[in-house]
Image (cartoon, rainbow, N blue to C red; front, side, top):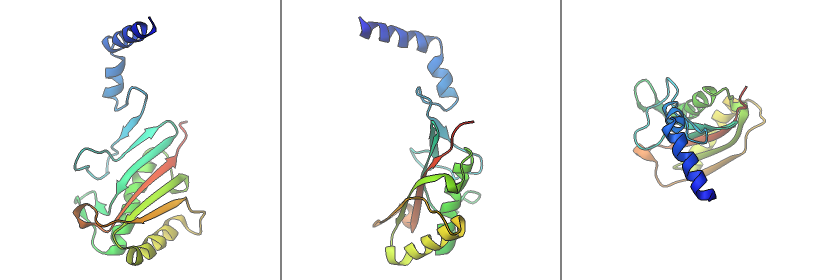
Length: 159
């Protein structure tokens, strides 16, 4: 009986347009918002730049791509900085700042070469801290033979 009642309620909600309205606004049935802020890079496949779920913003792995030219930034330091700036822009589109980061994951293709650059860029962006929890992982390869990818989770309570 309960299963039939739930099925009927779902069918009525769908026919009433409850789910189509959520989908049209970029929301899942449970209210997860897909993010595609103006000025962001263009996803190249089956992924989005980020999502908002409740008070948290989840930013996909960002690389050192210039959104205007859709190409990788030249130079190791410039590319690492651009990856962080791409992540920052998406977080800011939902009202978060870098200080609102609750977790970062950084992927590099050469730990000894790129970890010092990542550390320097974080110091530049976060000052003397406090710094968010971070995991840095050396990987064999990234898309387009890039050197770094940064993903973050941010706390951004809805007003």
